Image (cartoon, rainbow over all chains, first blue to last red; front, top):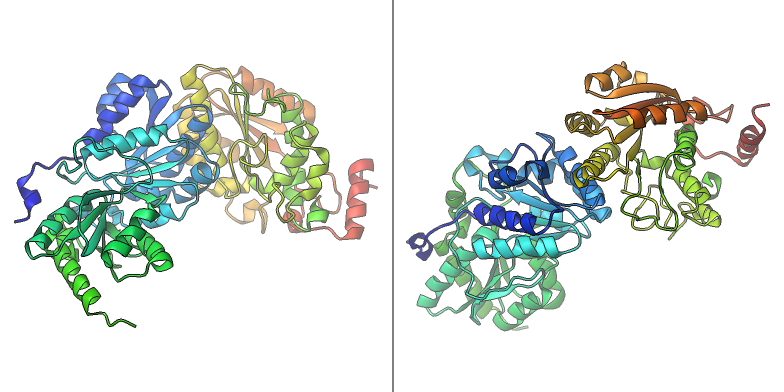
Length: 323
Length: 254
């Protein structure tokens, strides 16, 4: 049994919605924009308080994002709340043109990202969105790992002048951030120290990385665990330091192994400090039906699976013949 | 300008330039000395491929130096083939891919409503562009939100890039479609300033629903040998054609 299963798990949508209400109380320009997604985005409280500030465009994602860009042009601070799979895939050109290229102050909140809708099948999985969003210029991409980081990321997105994609889940995660944790856009944080291997993760995978580090410690492998909530702009210094200090990097993501966090990390590693890497994620397939937890385990991202990948990478590093 | 650039969308520009002139010199409350004033009227050129017509209008209205229009589409110029709001004062949102302007305009009009402000939003689309479904998503929302501060002008020149609209994916009956979507529809002659301004007056006086001005126009209006010929959507005139076109536009067809 992994340690996480003994801890209380929390759906971060609650922290997201509470923080949005706090922001809306303080700033009358904050509006929520949704596509018939009041319930799935936990916006009932917001709607009750400010029915006129909840702009529901119905099931129309292109219009959803275009309207948000127009609201921002008119001086409002729109938070678009929609299922990540539809928000990013259906409205990608609006995200590129109306939001990022036009530099409108829109916050895109992709709810139930990754395989949170695991049982609903691959149409509802959002495992390409890191790739799609991070290659668009002028778009900040953030995937918080627990309730506290979610609260701080929502506040940071509101304070940031410019487009942000917040990638949120509904899958329960334990509270893992240390007391006094301070989130900053573009800054990664070390949650476990080690010199043998680095495990870089975000979102729903960070707590699994910590569990894997505990398993590895029992066999004498010290893993550095880095929570990299901001996929763009990337904390390149943290990645280069991880490569230099530990000589091996495992990345984890609830996303395809192509184009996401692992790819972003690899781009930095090959340019600055080449070391062996293992990129864990959805292995280039449409995932089968199953709970998100079951799917993550199946794709090698249980604590045991992550530990096995790290162990193998440490072995590769140590047996590498010097040139 | 198109001749200097060696590219552009002359037919599309000449069909809507009268609408732009009517808007910028008689309707829009915009100030070239303060192009981002919060209370300004918003104008969105959804048919971004008519950027050349917008640039000459913005220059005439004082948003750009007149000389600068000759840099249109040159390497490094801020006057790109499609407008960029970060680079060009007076541009509200970036367009180019079709079907983007109306959703953004709906958001603008909704913002004015939510903030209790009286500025108005205008958006100019092509007609072929209305084949994009996003327009109809936005059309429904505008009626649902009762955005009487929103005016849609359709440059109904009956041609798209490769063929007449009617032979491609016919929009008819276009006015009936907008009426069915809850809009107040007014037919105007898009090359007659009295007719355009009368339509804009009606739109301003309309309450409880958005207004669609169906501007009947001609592709490449004003140049006899280009008018209503599909090739002139984005053909660049030869030197001899350029001289003939200028003569047509300044003296009328011979």
